[in-house]
Image (cartoon, rainbow over all chains, first blue to last red; front, side, top):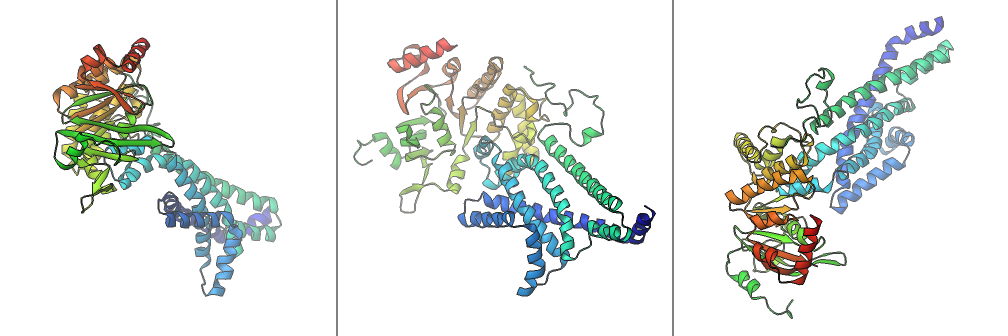
Length: 248
Length: 275
């Protein structure tokens, strides 16, 4: 155990930079995936065949081919075609496209799950198609997307060790070196597991706050602020159902 | 169409203005192989309140949905204020199916209240009402909110402006939905079984609000309802539908008091027994 801590101490700056790389790749990949989820998800619902077909192709391609192979392709094959991409850029691109493809189906499905009468009410108020989508449908669909996005984000986090395939020293890679140097597999891999658990839990907490906020906008639950205020005001704006039926 | 006997009313309206606010001219609507409206002709005058009654599946709600552009006609033409509604004029004077811009311009005159209220759950009560006036009509926010509060007072919910729709009872939600439709100052208001989804004791509040609207405004109303007393109170005219056709039409006293058609008599008997 002493050797382990000694070795860990030796690589501590690299350990933290490995953790940071893992976080960075997760957040940047997640951000790209998030944007692509909406772009592709909305295109999947387009009435224009070309847009819909293009999105369908991208989604099926990236869902249907291994992220492992995609990383290799971006990093080792593209230079042969004259494109040399930075390793982090390759990683973020692969994660973003992959999880964007899955996210697109989440966006499409959540929008489709909003009942048709909500669209019809928008028509009856003469809102444009864009207004109906932006101001009525998406805010409702958003609350349904978040828990599914949380799952994807955590899976993305757990895919980041793949970065070592393209020569990047993420936290797993650094700890493998510590394991080799110290011979203590239990401590080395145990610590990596702990790192992922903590990171995943932090992401879950943040996403849960987003979900609470989104639901509060729909009048469900007390919202994020409700976490910090005592439940002493029944009948306040945040209490559902309490004053439902009031006949004049 | 050409082989059918000419409908003198429809021909007249195609060339000269008439008093009709809404006119259905040989309108056909099919869902698959099911013909819901079968060459339907009828018109509604400006300011007139017309109630559509008849068994479910007789096409009443389809008429409202066609007017709200939620469905498209298969054949025939709908006119609103002497403008072809489901169609638009080409420069050559012919009619072709309407595009979204044309629909939007005419839809501007029409409001609708739905059976299931359809309030926007992501907006509080006040914003449900001000959303379209601000973002569709371009009204000033302060003006839209002042008007929304007036309307909320009118429907008896002046103190619920900041509530979420999910915190309201069905009857309260429906009264907000009525206020929301009125905030757009429609010339024509479509009421689609607005009390059918409500608990019985909540029905009266909604109907009383609508009686007020009928009394205090000159909005043209097309009403689909099973509340026969309400129909009798507010309508100028009642149309009895069956199988996509008008079986009988007349003032409420006549239709409810002394219906001539056997189909109408049978329908009204069934409705009264149900009560």
